[in-house]
Image: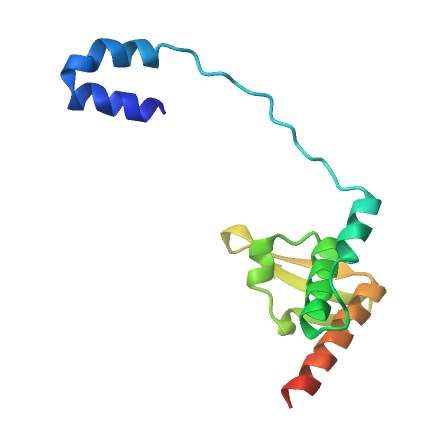
Length: 128
């Protein structure tokens, strides 16, 4: 809002005094509430939303499960490919590409790995 009145005082010099009065009003610094974490009950409620009887619901469930398990951001999921899932001695790993072209590898739990494996197999069947 300050930018507008700074601009107006140059555009309309007759309103300089009024604009200066408005610009001198201190801005109210409102308290911003930060959500630190989501309760287990809330996560369970979110994961129950997709309808697993439909292809889109199974996709949504797989993506939500992966996002929760890996802590992935939406921007990381946009860049995510099937090839970014692999297994090593320790279990299933997902490779995520984040801000600043940084890559991180995150191990995921076996139950989420099974969800992803089933979803990928289901997609392969429907595309054939």
